[in-house]
Length: 115
Image 1 (tube, rainbow, N blue to C red):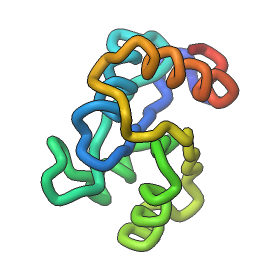
Image 2 (image 1 turned 60 degrees about the vertical axis):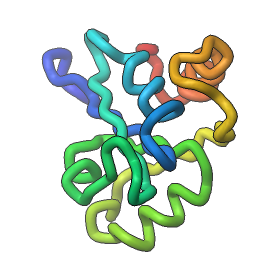
Image 3 (image 1 turned 30 degrees about the vertical axis):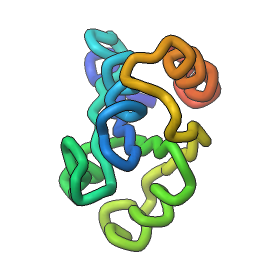
Image 4 (image 1 turned 45 degrees about the vertical axis):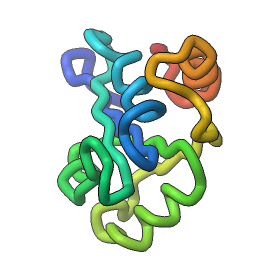
């Protein structure tokens, strides 16, 4: 689907962009097939999601359904035809928590074959 020299662009979204989505982004640091960025939905997020982030992404992964609902409400044009995958990962982990990393890998495996 994607040329070998063109990494698939993944966007990870949570509320504050401090723990879950940022950990997911870091899991792909230096990956040959996937390029990742992250953002948050809340006003106080480390990096707040914009239509530009969504336009950049090939696939958007959200941690909770509420994130997907908010994105669809706020950015319907930017999400048109774009896959949005809910990973169902609760907000109870710290940045780079080993359990969080394992959970992310497990939930992403079916969507990202080169993980």
